[in-house]
Amino acid sequence: MKIYFAGSIRAGRDDQELYQRLIQSLRYHGQVLTEHVGDPNLTHWGDEGPADQDIYERDMAWLADSDVIVAGVSTPSSGVGYDLGRAESLKKPTLCLYRERDGRCLLPMVSGNPETMVGRCQTEEEVLTHIRTFPLDFAANPR
Image (cartoon, rainbow, N blue to C red; front, top):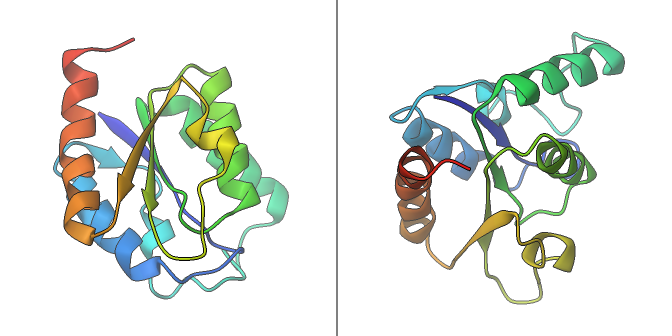
């Protein structure tokens, strides 16, 4: 199974360590095409080598090639939102992971979308439970 993991890069790297652990967990279910999202050396400036158009083309190719999408949506990011919209148009099974925290709320464009599974969590263990079950649920019940 090919997995596209979306997480905030230029909108903030506050969840980078969590992304890294989630990506490690996702590897048990298949190939994570976007492992760089969890890389501790990746700053909020993003990939410093490729041009923006190259990043766009690469990421859209990965998105099209993926079987499932898993997105960290606790840190609002226009790039992640774009990925989610594109995933929906491609009819990709999508799991959005949202850690409930004081002062933050999940955007209704994510929580209100019937095509997107939302994993609401308060602890990292709850997040990892969603990671462990979503690819298996998808494999058992593909769209």
